[in-house]
Amino acid sequence: QRRVRIGDLQRAKQDGRPWAMLTSYDQYTAAIFESAGIDVLLVGDSAANNVYGYETTIGVTVEELVPLARAVVRATRRAFVVADLPFGSYESGPEQALATAVRFLKKTGCHAVKVEGGVRTAPQIEAITAAGIPVMAHIGFTPQSEHALGGYRVQGRGVAAEALLADAHAVATAGAFAVVLEMVPGELAGRVTKELSIPTVGIGAGPECDAQVLVWQDLAGLRTGPLPRFVKQYADLAGELRRAAETYAGDVREGRFPTAEHTFGNGRTNPS
Ligand code: KIV
Ligand code: NA
Image 1 (cartoon, helix red, strand yellow):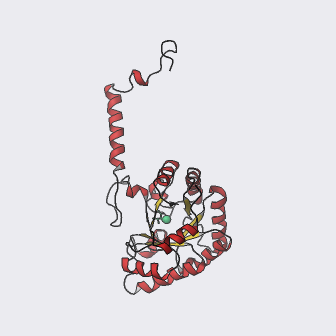
Image 2 (tube, rainbow, N blue to C red; image 1 turned 90 degrees about the vertical axis):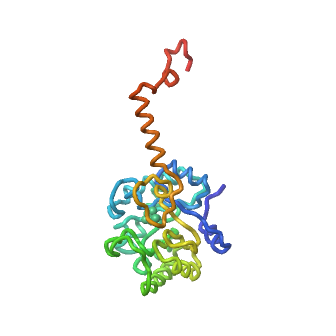
Image 3 (cartoon, rainbow, N blue to C red; image 1 turned 180 degrees about the vertical axis):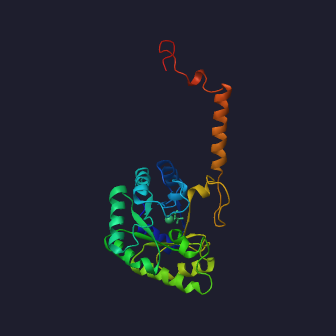
């Protein structure tokens, strides 16, 4: 079975078939999600929070994301793998953005890169796509500019809708093959989805987007504590793993593990 391509995602929009994207940062989740029918995997800079333990995505580096993207590509055969360009690796201008994108493709084998920002990032998107590298754009709430946006808040409400529409059209015109809409009112996301010919990928942007994306640790309940309203938790991995570790620790303390079953013989009486 061949890799998913951007044309497949485009056709899905035309046919009205919504598709699902998930983050992944390692080989096991990548292989599991691919076999579950996730067509697009995002090696997000959300690895900052979900892998490296930073408080925001701002500190994570190209050097930290590259090995994760490489692992996801290696573990998959069918999924289309998108890697986030981290904060500081593309803002200086088109040349810096293209150099970083090239580095990601060469070092990881990923199939596309993602950059945050609309109108302001259009020259970067243009330069990267002109070099033959597909770009996914990301507008609305953009975590890398959290401080400028004044925290985690819905974008594009009221008069701000015009700016969001301008961002959407700018990234499409610059050549992006898809655009993430994060924390945008559902109605506005629906309007963007209708106006653009490229697929919209919603996260906190309602049901009218062409596709949806979630951070896998949120969907799987590995992250504990309050979750954003737009997350649906489909499993309780934190509870499951805690129970496994607790049971193991208790078994060791009480002498229930290991038993003869887990112990090597001397090689004469027990051939295993
Ligand atoms: O880094 C990330 O996980 C993302 C998605 C939430 C869109 O950018
Ligand atoms: Na991101």
